[in-house]
Image 1: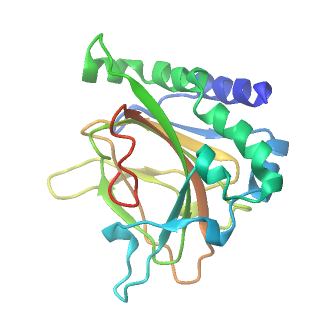
Image 2: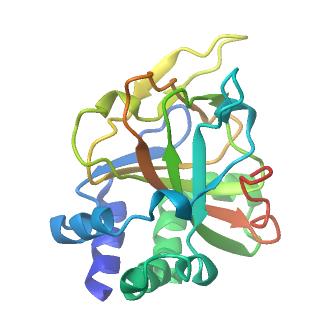
Length: 232
């Protein structure tokens, strides 16, 4: 699995930074085709996720539209036993110091502006998300204790390209769209959290299939426990 980590780091290192609304990157072929196929084949089953509590993830009739599963040693034990070795190795890659440093170095200019020369201790948290028709999330910058978010898009095909994350400028009470990332197989984006990092996901239509992704968030240590089961 060392080659998987090296591939991820190289992809992040090579990615071109878009400076607006704050520094962000978008990457295609983030994994090798073989690893991506295995990720899809080993995704958690429907009953292995938990619903989140978030106002943007509840329809008027009360139905919830987003589930999550934190990728930890504890949650891996809930998965199909045959999948344990794969996810244990992937979890160790995703929380590795090497991958964290690749992301921190990518956005170090903005992080230095935020913290100065003395950064707090940081921790990386990987989480599976599964979104359902009706899901949306309105324009927001992310909670202030987040430092960097990376999200791996995990669709099986390109039929949901329109459901990627949009980035916005704030203009008074308006949020014109700067761009929308394509929700394509084996792609990912990352951004540094700032007061300008406005982003959203438009509402999924009634006929859409589920939307799978895996988020990797770097937090100031001590805040990572604030999961989406309550407030992240």
